[in-house]
Length: 208
Image (cartoon, rainbow, N blue to C red; front, side):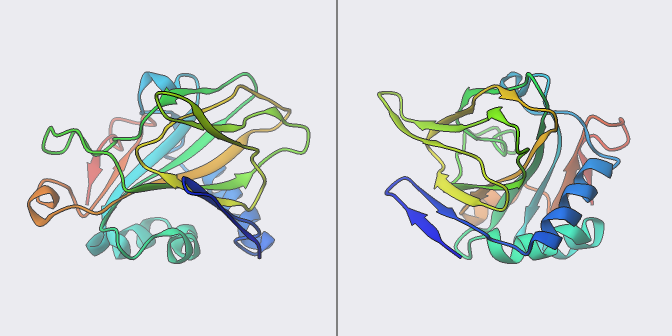
């Protein structure tokens, strides 16, 4: 296992057994919640589903998504107490426009950015052209990360980021987790565990 560090981001290679990655890929692609992304216009034409959860809701998350359990043990940072996890599928011709993550801002109507963001590359097709993660500030580009299957990337939550257009015969699949450390007051309006999906109105913003 190899880790690459910079001041703004880190990469952890060979993060999981390859058998687990294969199972995770299958579970994401067959998940009934998978549909057109419910995220912002920056994710137009991409697919995915999301879950928001506090540490107190991890048990509920693992009951609904047992395949995420090994991922959670490795990817979540102990200092954080709220998480917004997004399964993201980019097919041929799709991209993600520049944005700063702030997915929990709707709770309490207060703009909030994560302490950090993690990205696990579950599947990166061998014939992929493009699909790089581009990190930048308002002034300049910080880095371009070439996606590689089974690499776990962390970057600062205040960074503007985007994904270049994907050209490949198979989808590029990743798990993105916004990780927050919030005060008790800010935690109050956030549910322990909720699923967000456009697959069906029954699933959209379903709280447990």
